[in-house]
Image (cartoon, rainbow, N blue to C red; front, side, top):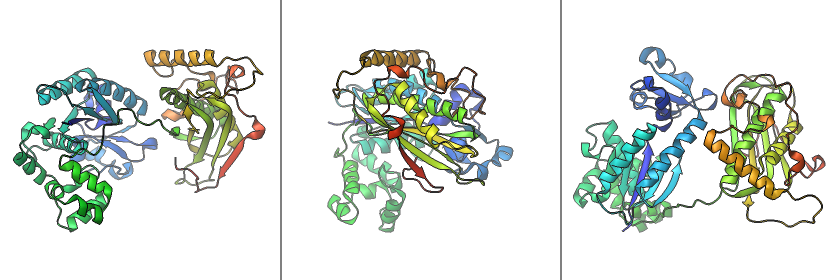
Length: 456
């Protein structure tokens, strides 16, 4: 019989911050989006102050004086590292794992023997002890039921009395008798079901479908005719029929992006080169991680649409002579593209790099032997750099154009002057086997203020 578990980090971004700042425990804390715009994570104490997800910071920052609310700028590099640690420990719960998001992963429990509730509590305690991240674990015979069980586990802990206390932290719906399941489902609003959005929930409630139990008892064929096959699948999952398989080998991405908002407006080309070089480097690492190579590099930069002053929004696509995952080649292309669109006098607030037209790295296009072949050596070099950065910390072995990744504006610090020895071009490009097609072949895409062909 199929059985799934969902391991979910509680208030993940806030929990990561509290690991390194224990003094924040018991205080209301929110983590803010890029440029400190809105709340993207809230502690339980902040939720008790009725701060909604996505609430603009300027609307709630007055709670700093009245209720001690703490607002923190996001540190996505930290969150990514903590996520990797948490996921590696959670994988010990069962033989298969699907990393669903930065703080959630489904675990395949089929064939796992013994007391699964006790096993899950042991894994939860191990994650807490080894990483400091509190988690909730829900189990069910389908992924939808596991997701619902996770909601019950977290709610039972955060709101005592909403569910039986034994469901707190770990909830195994598969171990409950049918009558007890019905009681739990009747106490849960239909909008809490995975796949039921706000609008569908409103439509269901208008039709008298108020709870999970009501939805579970609906006829799937009727649901399909009235709504969609997606909601029909949700109903069947609630009824115990597994319709969504574990995706333990996600499909490789067709595009890879690395974009950031700056901590303060940037006007000079030097700091922009540092930031874009960093973005291209991070994107190249992700590209190699999925075993792909890129054929084109898109780079963009724009001013804030909400601030007064002249507007600027441009991007360009730099085609590569042959697909590559070499960091130096991709950074060189990104810097070339940035130079082609840069114009002085604008207060740029965001920039980014996208790797396009991705193909598997195992595919190789043969060419006439007109130059020395160094692809194999470059692949080994990139693998060595990735290994060193993984062992000693990201950015331990940077390119020259990255400078110090802690000092460029992409991480919220004031942009400083470039080092005197910083070169305009990326070092090592003469050996790049994925070189550019030439500046004459550069394809430019200009975006007028307020328009964009892509949503970044």
